[in-house]
Amino acid sequence: MNAPEVRAAYDRVAHAYANQFSSELDGKPLDRALLDAFVELTRGKGRILDVGCGPGQIARYIANHGADVCGVDLSSQMIAEARARHPKIPFRESDMTALEDSDASIAGITAFYAIVHMSLADIERAFQEWRRVLVFGGRVLLSFHVGDERIHLGEFLGHAVSIDWTFHDHKAIEALLQRTGFAVDACLLRKGVAEVEHPSLRAYILASACALP
Image (cartoon, rainbow, N blue to C red; front, side, top):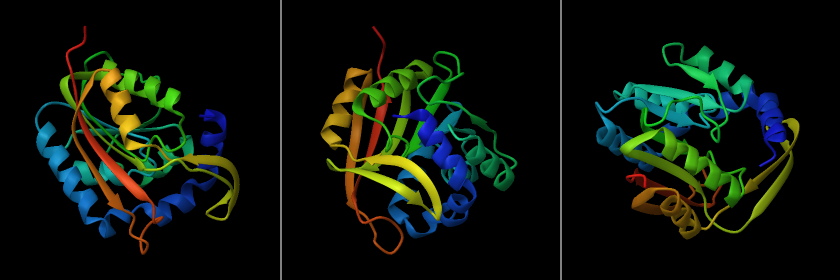
């Protein structure tokens, strides 16, 4: 991942992105159901990190359903949008591969489309960091586009950018999770809903942090 390019792109589109996607869960009942299950599995166990939180729509949803959540994102302007829209939820600028949280201090991580700009090597580093901050048995719920495509955009939401979207094989992501200290509890694939999102195949993986050696 070219972090400076990704940060610059999302800083540039942050306000337009927030306006377009802040209510996206309204049209995604399956996403809501998975988030409901995640909140139930982590209830009362500690803080949740919503990594790659953008304008905070996922953090808002799980906070409204009882989670103690903090959103983190690489883009300072996305964090500004999230704070303005959800002032009762903490948000901070942070790289998901180098979190400020202490070892074994986090109960769960949500990562909806947070890995879409990353190579497999980048994702492995992120998973290692997530395992470091999670308690034993802590949960991860992540989603991403499935396939072998790489899409470059020079324009996004009416702004000039330079950014790549990378699709991943769900089996490869499962293998990385297992290599970095997780057990895969469930994997669900669904088709994109053309009316509300890009019509790509999507994967949702629920994983648990295993005991470290």
